[in-house]
Length: 309
Length: 274
Image (cartoon, rainbow over all chains, first blue to last red):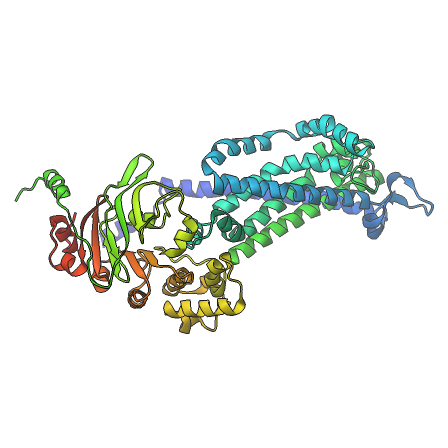
């Protein structure tokens, strides 16, 4: 009887390790709470500011999304401010899709070489190069774009050289490492026995890559491309340096235009908080934020679909 | 009794007993001469000089790391990019271990089934049609026919004939392994190499797989690596015993299991090994 009581006492005593356990749980949970609070605050802030254009300045949402004139300082004939964001939305999407289209074949080709054709050389040379490319600051990319890409575009296509095409060239190089390394990861996750099964059936290496490895890695490759697109969509500085920053509908790939981000970075410092000009920029930021959320959603959906297969 | 194991080992390594199959009606279809395999600088297979009789089952047994899988994988050059293989592999009189040999055509003739069932994430039909399509067989009628006969030969047809378009990943382990066999025989190989095909299967599936192999023997030469000595005794005509990268004994299965000539083989088949 006494022994039982003693044992119970021993078992119920909180040890130092148990206290440490609780402490650790509290610390990690509060870290999580802080991050969540920050994210919610950012979304709430941008949303409240961005909606103000439509609630307190009474701009029509449809006019905002489809209007082609962006000039918040001027009111048009009907007394309404000119805040049509369509040129920027088109510019952002165009530059994102084009750079992803150009980057994807290069990225997948590089990933295939690194993983399937020459794993040793790939690991030794391409891996550090890819990582280096990720580490270069975007202002450096923008500067190179400004002093190399823009003059070349000007010499070939005429005009000023600023525009979607130059932006695409710069963004292509910027998102290439991201898409490449993620594609390489996707290929790496294809099990070795898939390749062996294919080779043992007499398939050539190219047939194995094309018919088995790339097919099995498709969800991962799509995620890589969408990640690259998300990065291209959100890139501000480098694009702003080469796109020309004219809030006009792009009528060709070499005409000066703008993106959501480039208008934001050029305009945000020159407006007064609470004014229509300022609120309109916040609305652009809100559009950007929503698009990022949509990109994330797409990535999640692809990931889930990949797991189900 | 005190036995110095080190001395025993080195003496036993010199002892070898390798015979040549000579049964009438079963000519030698594949033989290896002076085969050595290196992983980097490490030698994994020292002696590989075996002859395989056609339309018979030959079992390769031996402890883990004895080189039997390495040997098997060399036979259809699956070690090409992984290891260095020297020596000759004579297939119907042609040395297939030469650079000039078209390894893809050779692998069609010498098929392989792996330890872990590895169907592609495609339908059952597409799994079997995969290698055929690569070889330009695209006629629907022709494909249908080959898919059916291959599945019948692998004893899987009755279970899946209504689900040919369902994913092969939904099959059980035993069914998946038989699908892999059907996939391998769809391209009409000469020789079928099996690397511990039943090690991931339950006893019932294993039994079914063995029955399938015994039937396949009519049309194919089968070389099988197995850890299961009862399995080797049940299905094979010839057995090779591997130890530490060497073939120590090669004879008819009944000889190996009832009257082994080498002490290490005797210890291994009677369970006194190690």
